[in-house]
Length: 353
Image 1 (spheres, one colour):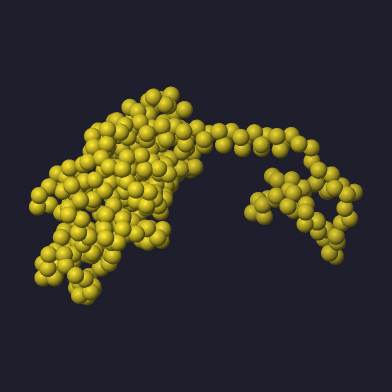
Image 2 (cartoon, rainbow, N blue to C red):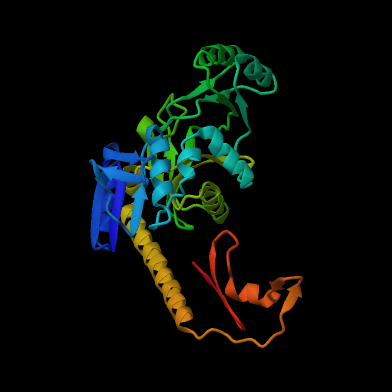
């Protein structure tokens, strides 16, 4: 089986591609910056370095929020042709904090109380209902970037005035005091295969490893594991990192990362995360190919089965012949497709064109 990994060539991506080589016959690493989408001709095409992309049995696409639209376009076109662990829509919702929270809300996944504001006036109106400290976020951004903490309503109002100049929505979120700690649960398929507690450096509220946080491997309880898996399902993602806050009200999902780094969690847990990802991709691809082969076999068998002969009287409506209802169900004709009708005295044949 052939596989490809679309990414920006990070260390995590290289680890994953290397692990995939143990399972797949061939593995290609494709730089997302060399991909193009060609539309408007006789057919749509995805080009890699100016040439049509190869056919693959599995494609694992990942990348930063800057490539969200391109990733969604590519995966939308390729999704029916091969196994992909991330649904096309997820590249839009997963890289936008506002859309992520909407998906989590629909999936009934516990999260901090969050408000969306589009103007300074509406934000300051919401501000009156909140207690400090308050988290203010931009819709896009990773590794804790674009996240600010306001210790007072006055500082929050100043941040809001500054952000309103960007003329885009932003989020106001309740502050959950966890002592500068959060949990990263790594979900693969329907399992949490590794998890760690991240501890922020002194004077920092963000516990991200990229912000200097320290990771320590832990075993999550069943409730927290379930919430992480539900968060991944809500976004249509089979491989992701789920960031969770352990609050007095129970675990709350803060974010779902579609392109999580492997270095921190591998070091903290001593678990070969890249191998578990590769094995999952291989097994799911194999299932998909087996299912398609079985479906094709059933179709071939059906085509060679003799047509059923049914003894029945015809129903006439004036000069028209109405076929019995069970004939419609048996033939499974589509009213959008044209048919060929062959008629002679005492004989009638109808078939798809």
